[in-house]
Image (tube, rainbow, N blue to C red):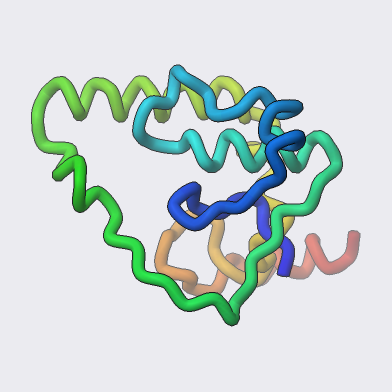
Length: 123
């Protein structure tokens, strides 16, 4: 299945593709470096593929802890801003691999606006 991004915790990529894409962005020291990398790889014409048959356990933030100090919160906010700036067009257009029937406003996979869905289906 094609995706726009996958987690770096379980990512596999050919060394030549990794190097051609420029590796992970150093400005994104904790969050979004995998998303940014995948989007750059996708821009190069490669597919980001997810295998639903792989079984793995990933405990997000287990080794680095919560984002609960002023320094960590500031870093996270800076990384959000970096992504907003670098991927502004992508964010405005929306993820092409996200189901058009889901809301683009809510994060609970609820159904989106029926009028918007109809407009999308007419394209």
